[in-house]
Length: 295
Image (cartoon, rainbow, N blue to C red; front, top):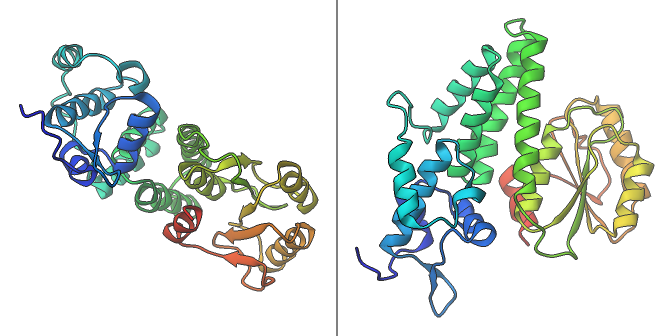
């Protein structure tokens, strides 16, 4: 096996099935591998690095914690991999439509642990925005529509929400703030009790190094403004999913008028009113949101 550092991060992502984001996190947070650097600062990996990452990925998919195995010697990882082979019946989870279908089947049977495990594996091998757009979002929409039509029960909707809430909180905690000066407050306005959209953007903000204060759902404008001022946040992000047009316009306008002028204000969600002040940026596309957070 060559010890030449020859693989760039994009190729390693393809070879291991890990997203480039997960690769960075495993390197920075867990010191799983230490790639060499080009003169321009790009990362280069050896064959041994690729093999090690494949072993780690396989063991994590079988239930091991990356924090518990990241620094083990390669020989130990090989022994563990041989001792705990993947079940023969385990279908690959990299195909996103199949992941969604299998998660939905688990939710229909109220097998929340099974759904959580599949979602966690998918989150490790998928870019965050893609994971939210292709897995989390469509599952939430499907559960909502099938509950509305009577095909699913309230228990199914609540189970799905609980799984997604726990997953998004866990993902958000994986990213330590890399810039203490970049602070964002995330919430939903008064009357809005659906918080999963707010949790999605909280995860994206954390991923980009922001210090996130997540306040949860149904918060009055005055309390939102207080939190922004108290933390000296430079950005406020509100998610609006179910308010009617008048309530959405009222709450967004109230939050805008209470904010210091220095604060950027971004709102999104299917019920975010389009009739808002010029100081509010309305955005529904998670890729655009992620891009704005990276600046």
